[in-house]
Image (tube, rainbow, N blue to C red; front, side):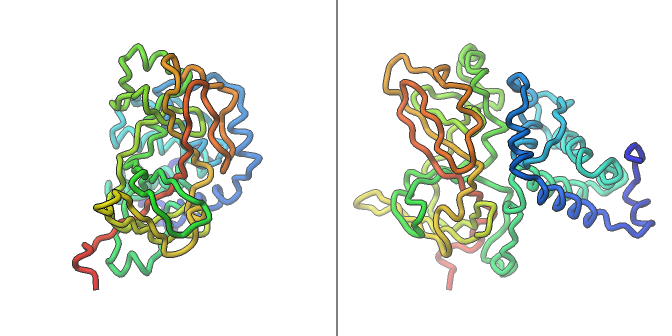
Length: 326
């Protein structure tokens, strides 16, 4: 009976490991989400989503699961932890039923419930690759795990090393849920370019992602250092960003294993647009060009120069300073 809610204590009394139940259900759901399901999600005939329910729909699109769209109880401007937990409970219920939701109910410890839902959020939004362990590096203490961040990268996809990392950027949070749909551009313009997530739109340098969402700019440049990166597929490795050359200003990058393509998350598409004409506008974008297929180039927008960027997941950073390395 999916209306029945069991507390964590009751589940434990019946010999049920709550965390294992959650992880097994999620793993099964994610592994059976086919491309056909993803296509069905993207091809649903529904009106463009507005700002206050972007977050919930991103979970549907990222995870590839055909979950029902639900309006979050919390407002778009107030994405507090308690609000996000409530949204995640509704998402979980579509996969595993209310019995699992009871594991994060008020009877569970706040720390454990928070840990469970943080893990669930990573799985739904970025897939199993975002939870990649690479346990040798993390257990050795040389790297520490962090909430998933995102690198915007340029370079030969078939290369393991390259130059030009001074042109790479970093989003410390997923810019998609913080973004504004192209269909809401006029509203963004009326608001002086201020997005609901309190970032400011720059008409001379703006970013777009695969579903037609205008994103905030990443931070430039990417700081020198070592990062554990993955594309959510088969390769998780260390990316080294070398310090800037004092004479040329160039920064080199290097992967321990694989190529730039191997650590690119193909469903995440991103591009940077700069105007070629004084009257260029994001409103010139063709809504029919979205969503963009995994691995495909982002669409052109009339009046703009476009630069495509690869997106890499950052799941860990160096915890030992370069001067202390042996």
